[in-house]
Image (tube, rainbow, N blue to C red):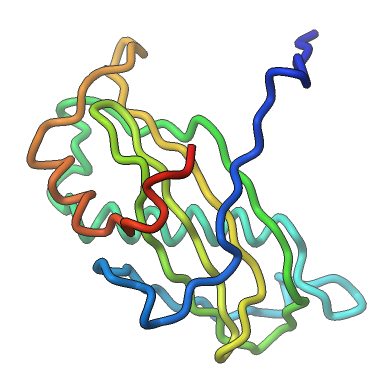
Length: 162
């Protein structure tokens, strides 16, 4: 059984919404259609779908940035942590747009911010911390050209967050 020391646990404070004119970096965008299978009997989208959407958007972004083999020859991307907050409900047959930006890009890790919109309404936002590891599961340095590509999506306003 694992335990968590709540005194040392820090939450990351991320702006819930950035306006379009505040997005000074390149922002990755991906659309998702909500289906009936994504909702319960009341028509509300299951919370777990938002985490699934994070994964879908992250994978599409990885493929855009590193299309050849997603760097698998060098190592693997590992999700160290993930978080998701609701703002409003979503329902089947709505189109959700995910906006993805990077922040806190370091030598071995980086964070991704996900913002989910239906039309112009922010319905959810979340983040992930990603580390790069060797095939024998040791954290290793990202190649410099990879760091440079990730920084293309870095939002300077988010870089001060931990």
